[in-house]
Image (cartoon, rainbow, N blue to C red):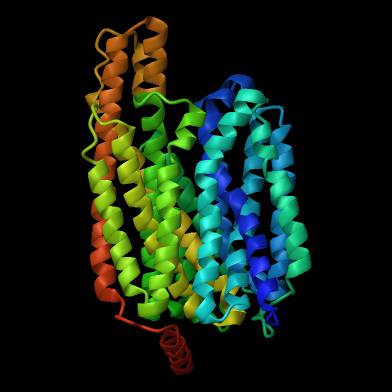
Length: 510
């Protein structure tokens, strides 16, 4: 891609930000819509889980081959294709008549998201010189981050005024505007010497990731010792190990795994994955706390997530500026330490803690995640040759999604175990006890129907115990990653130095 005029390039960044904004919506908007959809579609627990998980499964499973396809056939072309798929799937979901149709549409949304994310980041890598890349990346990351609290806010408003399908229609005008702007503002870019299609690598990575992520999303409900879960996880690991073996030996691999021998690329990916682990863990437990412990509705829950996103936006800007001046180590390590500190404060939440206390540690945690995330991703982009930007950024996004899915699976299991152990259902009929043990939403429903305020209070205490345990675990992971980042990155390591290192690595063929 030829370097566009300065003003046009930044307008192009605005267009790319619109493209990823809808993905931020879809991370959280389903959280507020599931109860309404359960009633309207007569959907059971399994159906609701697949409405959520089909999106995650396809999103995580397809990004690696999509990145390579973007490098080969054109990043702008593939981004426009992904946006078109996303818009069509949104329309299909809005007017779906049953649970199966919604699951299929959500899966198609996952396909669209898997095309949009690596294509967007690859275009950033090609469009900007290293000195400006971090700033452009921070704008796009903030756009996606802004969609996270906007999801429940907009979703809550739409559910209060329209039918459940309206939550999907919000994507359509945003995507349409992004498509027009991208078509006008961007020129095409692709690898001038694309490798021969690595069909075996694409098959191994796609099936392996789909199998592994499927095991992760099913584990919290089926149990980690379930035969299907174990088979999916084991099969995924075997296929992914086979993928790595093949890529290291293939004459023209789909993904150049030698990039992991470059320190900035390796640790940038690891730290971005840890930051995503913390963010996904936080978003997994906090909305239910705001709704069922503090008593907010869906719209109020979205509003109360704003301190988190406010801290995140400030952190993204600060981390980018600091990285541009002194290198990646300081903002990444400090951001992870700050994330751990905020989560540790959250782990001391008790029943007397109000929203003021929550807002304080939300802001601290968001500040830390933002400070660490963008410099970590910029470290990855810094070492990618432009012709491999699609496949390289696909690695980062795949690891982030897989790390988020792993975090939700592990943390969900911990939350469920603590909640179930602490909840007293003595004297309840078996069906009511099972519903109460299933989730805090089920317990509050049983308490309301049977007029059992003691059960409601007990469920709130049990959920709070589970949430604080999860936050403590996330804090420990973030602090450990901060210590590692402070040792792994060289102080003041420059982008040019990283580019030289990857060039020398490739030249030596190691």
